[in-house]
Length: 310
Image (tube, rainbow, N blue to C red; front, side):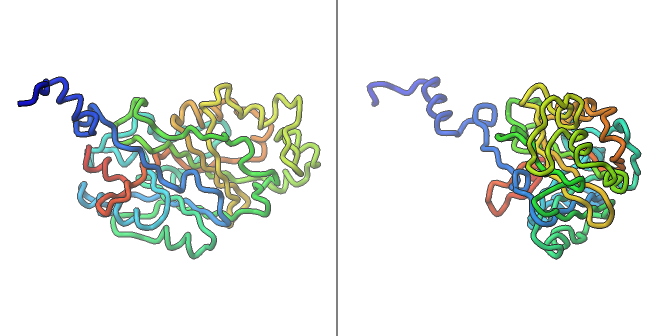
C-alpha cells in the first residue's frame, strides 16, 4: 500500500486541477464571433428575421445553417417567448423609443439578426440569402464611403475604445450560455442631407465637436455631439460601427456592449436635445444579443448552448 493514502479532500483537489469536476468548479473557455471586432469592410448589411421553426430541434437546424454563412448571428427578445423554452439574456429587451425617434414597426426588432460584412454585394447576398425556418422582416444595406467617413463627412469610429469591454463574462449576472456573447444595438437613421449640406464646414464641426479634415476633437465644445456622447465611466464605452445607406440618405449604426442600458441607452439620454437631432431621424432597428462563438468542433454551432442548455 501507498505510505500516504489519498484522502477524499486530496482526491477532489487533484480532480479539480485536472478540470474534471462539474461546471460549478471549472468554467469552459469563452468563444467570440469574429464579426464583432472585425474592421469595417467596403460593404455591410443587417437583416432581421422572424423564426418560423416550431420546436427546439427545428430552431437548432436553423442555427446550424446560419452558422455556416459567415455572418454575425444575434437573437432578439421576441425569440424568448414560450415557443422554445429558452433562457433570455437578462438585459435583452425590446428597443424603447428615444428622443427624436419616429419608429416604423415594420423596420424594428426581430427574432434573429444577421450582420454581413464583405468586399462585394454578392458576398452580402450569399450570407443573407433566405433559409427554411426564417422569414425576412427587414434588411438594410450600406456601403463604406472613402476614408471610412459617415454620410455627414466625418471619420467613422472616432472615439471607439482602444480595448473594447463588450463581452459577457462569467462574473456577469447572466445565464451561463451567454458568456462570450455581447449585446448588439442596431439603429436605422435617415439623414436630412440637403439641410446639413447648406451648413458651413465650421458650423458642421461645431455640431460634431471634431475637425472634418483630420478628426481632431475641438476644445471647449461642451454641447457638441462628441462631448455629450462620451460616458463618464470608460467601462461603459460602446464599440461603434457605421455604414451609410446605399438606397437613400441614411446611416446604419451598429454598436456592441456588455450592458445596453449602461451603454447605448445612457448615451442616447445624454444626447437628447443636442443640435444634431435636427438632422437625424431614427426610424428602425432593435436590441439583440450576439451569440457566443463556436468552439471549433464539428458538433458545435452558434446558439448550441442556448438551445440545448435551456
